[in-house]
Amino acid sequence: MRGQRTAIFPTRFLLVAATNPCPCGHAPSRRCRCREADLARHARRLSGPLLDRIDLLVYVQRPDAERLAQEPTASSETERARVTAARERQRERLDGTGATCNGHMDARLLRRHVRVSDDVERPLVDAYRRGELSARGRDRTLRLARTIADLAASDEVLREHVVAALGYRHEMSDGVGVAA
Image (cartoon, rainbow, N blue to C red; front, top):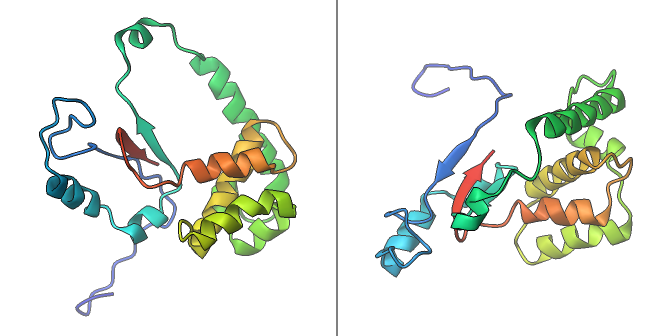
């Protein structure tokens, strides 16, 4: 609500965004001519609170010529089957809760369906103490770790799943970042 007007926006959507690593788009190659001030200004365009609400930050590096010529490591059919199986696991686990997938779990459901041992919790605590993770970011990381576990057909969220999920939350530093 603003200026005596009310607008209602959908609350469930998928945002996919991309940004160049620098204003000219050539970092980290030698073709980049951006100055430190340009890089800092470019990095500030994505605020911390905005980034805290994004679950995945994927850095896409420019492949070398040999990698570009190689066959894909996985087929679309294989990946589709993994995702379908993971979504089915989520559907069964969340049946009757009102949530349809891990991303739709509220804090109460998250605590019920994602219980982790002290060893698994340790990377989250460490990241929080270093100021790299907010309370909101912790819950988002656990939801993502649950999804990573589902993709691995694991009933439990293991330390490796939490570490992988934390890896997707690091600040953008090099390469092209894609947020989803």
